[in-house]
Length: 224
Image (cartoon, rainbow, N blue to C red):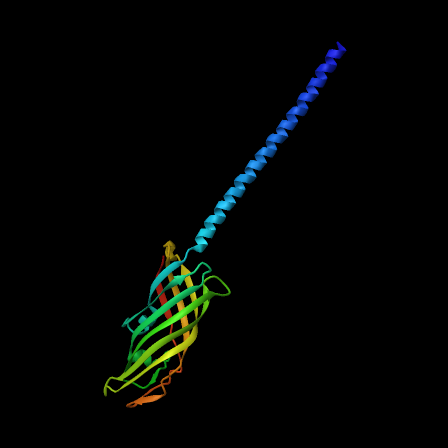
């Protein structure tokens, strides 16, 4: 009888040991399966993020800044491309009809006197790179501008064209109002005219030198 009890006890101990090994094996296999799934998911997201980072986006916008200063008698804007590293290559186009009020204002300070209106036509290329925080960027620039001033009484004119070099600081926000690709950019370029206007008089009004020139642009558009 005691041998039967001993045999039953040995069988019980062996069964418990075998079940414990099986449970440990199943746990190890479950952990391995979970790790494989996690690795596969991470790899998929890495590929997805990598694919997204390889894409570039194009954009186009209208300038409301200078337009507002000149009674919307203008056609200006920007086109360009956004690279995967958030750098931008953009071309700004300006065709402004400058009002007498704006030219003689404390903001513009382009003329000293009355009865002079103007026109500005220009192209400027920028290469923007991000600085400090999201949305803020700096850009070197080069461009070409044609400036014309006309005395509204005598119709005497002053016209000067020049290549320019300079830079700009800009701030951009995208996906406005949760509309994908809808953006605005406030950009303040400062440029040096390589062949500037020398201070000139048209009748009794003085056209000031434009050695250093600037704008305030408020672009609104889409990137896609």
